[in-house]
Image (cartoon, rainbow, N blue to C red):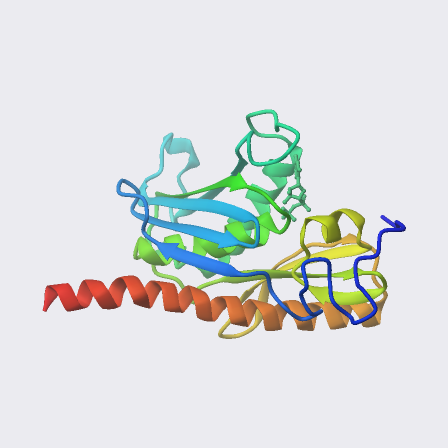
Length: 243
Ligand code: UDP
């Protein structure tokens, strides 16, 4: 959406003072939930999101079972208080779409063939939303899967890039998402840089698209290091206690 609002000032700073290739502050906590098999709490800018993983466990009802692999069900939900205009509770088109693309992205890295007839449930609850929730949600879900000990080929991670005031920038905030020209969420398997989720809202030229993908992948690698650091922080402590 075009607007008269200036999103980048003369010095090249964005509304929240960030440079064009700078991420919002990110904090990742592993295992905050007692009951879940694996969990993660992430704060990414103004986003606050909890991810809880249950499974692998017998897929029920039985007709959803796959004889050769586990079924992966990610469910993305926004709390009604997570946005300014109260969101009507329950699934809608947007959350159904986000649940589907996140399920498919995660299914690609999980070694589902090790768990025939099982299901892996991934719940993503957005408590506070400030743009980029699908990237933050997928990133938290990946950490929760690792916390649950679910075997994966890689720990997936996501980050968005976009276009505001004619410039390609990293990790759009709320005003940038509302008034910018494009948003491009990308999820990767960071060891191989395989793209496992790619969506686009708005318009980019081919050159801008290439630039945005490259920037998003670079950002995702920074987030990937934070995921690993958070997991090590939990399991390094656990190992020390055991000795
Ligand atoms: N949003 C909202 N109400 C809604 C859905 C979204 O206020 O019903 C806000 C929320 O802050 C969200 C942002 O719009 O993070 C951008 O939503 P989008 O669909 O682009 O997904 P996201 O960027 O969160 O992955």
